[in-house]
Length: 308
Image: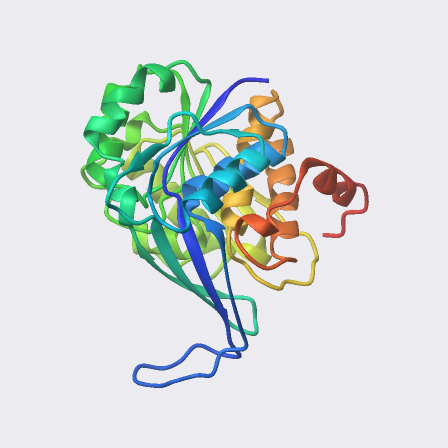
């Protein structure tokens, strides 16, 4: 087992379920509301912790009503929280999430204290980040700080997995330092300008992203279509498992966390992707971000009775 660090966002998710999303200027009556711990960074850390990884969370929260909820969820999921910055006079990051009857979601994020994951913070934690074997990153914290982090890390360790969400330009981002980039099909299309509507489209788009970024591999998460791996010499498709989807929130984060845990245990990329597919599939069968992320025993039980 090799250690994992996650640098990223911690948010409180305000979740509304509705039959369909409203059109501009339209009001739709919601069916239910709840709040729970979320944030792409924290979600991925929770996934790593619940699935057996040795993981530490790096990020920032405010001093408000939601702070304890965020910290408690991490602690209960076996995530180390010693290096989370607590910011006076700031509120925690907030994500407004709409979920429709088809389990698709739309999300608006207000960064709050996540904006304090800045260059100064990164500088203070770099010694600890250079000591881990795997590093998970996303794009919900300030891009200049993430850029600085990549520029300051040693050239070969840790291995870095980037979830390029929310999608934004990577033109000035040191992507050549990444080991793996894991867009979903919409982010892959946005990043390359190529259609990802078909398997062939994903193959072409992932190869273009590989060429333009200099990463070693691209792994596209495509929901019910499964996952697609591209490393320049091979293009592999891993079908999704058959489940009854309720809410897709955090499924991609569960996937990334599971993938990294499996790789940290020395599994092959093929085995790791199948494990990650199972974790992501289980995640969509329950509501909420971190509340829906499965534990190791759940994934292992599911894999014993898998249905593709």
